[in-house]
Image 1 (cartoon, rainbow, N blue to C red):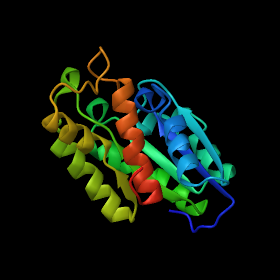
Image 2: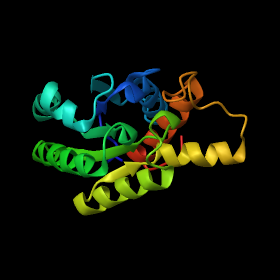
Image 3: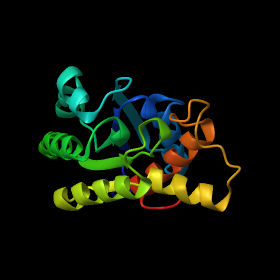
Image 4: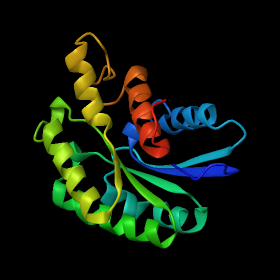
Length: 188
């Protein structure tokens, strides 16, 4: 959480369609605006459909946006079912170094598993995120874990869109609430 009172706060989201579907960044911005009236909030995003952190590193302007954007926090979203843990950890480290050099905070947005690529469970995704976050001194927004808990408590809740991979509006809302809670260190 930024030291209040502050006059501005900015967050860059880097990810794929799990991030831009339903405008996760705008939902997080709305939570922050509600929590900190009078603080100028800026969000931006570098996103590419189907992209892993490796692709976002090599084929987008993500590095340049971090270096030149003046962001307080950068939220990195990897889609582990689409890649593997070794690649995630390698590119998480690369991004973290650029984020750290820019004076910003790294937060990993933990996504969720899906059936089409069922090689990894929620527990595996949690472990991969915890390992890299601990090794880098970064934070994790455990949206995938929140999804799992929400579905255990209410099996009727629809967090996935019709494709069974992307978030429904409810799934995006829960991911945004979790991300806000980590950024602001309080419940929305």
